[in-house]
Length: 215
Ligand SMILES: C[S@@+](CC[C@H](N)C(=O)[O-])C[C@H]1O[C@@H](n2cnc3c(N)ncnc32)[C@H](O)[C@@H]1O
Image (cartoon, rainbow, N blue to C red; front, top):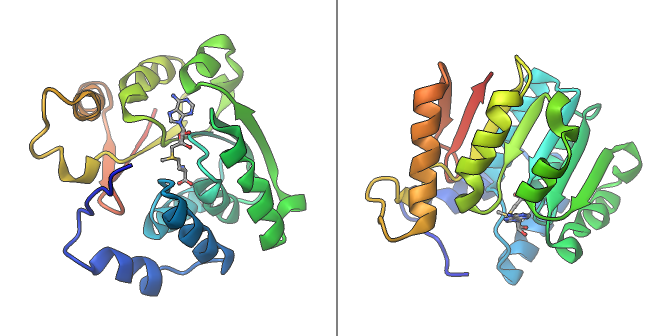
């Protein structure tokens, strides 16, 4: 994967993530180092902090995460709302299993109620309506799936449920989206769908842009 540019001025984002984010466990920094070394995309530490705070305010009974990665964002959400029941979906099982490894290192594995599902996000959503009662959706998988995910979840999600999509600034590409790039088009399509169908939404310009809205 090619390195993707930050939306912040040179050097600011690493400074924020290293010096200004309050991390509930030093293992988060270890996960960041591992993700960097292995070129695994994860949310930024600042994004993790915002996610954690959002769930700490909302106290969702159930969280559905689409895109586990190595469990970095899952663990941030766990720290924000320890009683939430989390389901997290990823097609890359070997990588997603690291969630348990890091939870163990943090000493929180036994406190977590997390179910990992291995498979395609869209197939998982379409196969079964297990998600219908979800209180908080966090979406961080392939951008080309974003419009379809919104289209699938939004009409059926329960009233009051919350949605967060990561990468909605798409490394600044939203300024000049390339019509030949499917991921650029998908992020723009998500924005158009949200702007036309959601009455109230908030962009947190943290990390690569977090879009929050409620049904
Ligand atoms: C950006 S990473 C998730 C990072 C994670 N949220 C974090 O911050 O720690 C995206 C993940 O989504 C998974 N993924 C992408 N598209 C998917 C799809 N269509 N179905 C299942 N998994 C998908 C990839 O395997 C990858 O692990």
